[in-house]
Image (cartoon, rainbow, N blue to C red; front, side):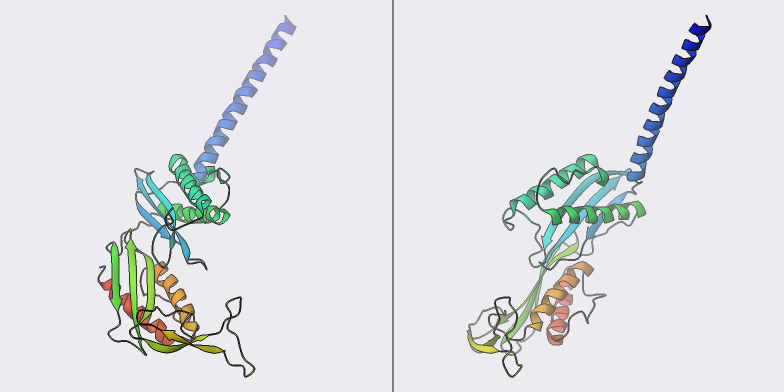
Length: 284
């Protein structure tokens, strides 16, 4: 009889212990899930990251209703055209597949911690960008930092009132989702003329002569030609255009720009900012 009672007690303890472990595991899983999915506040959200050296940047949008994600999109954009990567403008098909897969995974799982980044091979930089960008987007949603469109969607252009040394400055700004996605600033030759360009080495660096001056060579410029390293010798101008293209996109306009980010082409910088300001007035 005592043996029967002892055996019954042991079985009871084992069952209780098993139930306790199951309860503990369930609680642990619940805590893990709740810790990785913070409460999201209703609203529309948008985040835009700075462009890289290739002029490509990530942009992601999300809608939250009743605390749940109801709409989401992530893509990578070209700074000059303002277009998102697609089959017509991007030849790296594996990269497009990764973007498509990550979008689908997050739409289904709605949890960044549960994304399988190895589901599609390749495009390591895109995977890293997705994780960083969407992570920051979720932080905005947790804080309730909603997004309201800054401009009306469209393409807006402006030109200088007169040419400068045979070149006419002009700008085209693309707005999508109410935010600046593309900036294309360039100078166009208004007449046939002679010009000079810098001599570059195989790495694209200017060649310096024995007199420590940049080597140049004469070129023929035709009306309608766009200013480039092939027909213009003052190279800092192109660095300035690239820098302020990035800044205008990231800052959604010409406010709060770092004017001293690039030196050596003040006139180009000032003209670009003035024309951007003029173009964006049309988008209000």
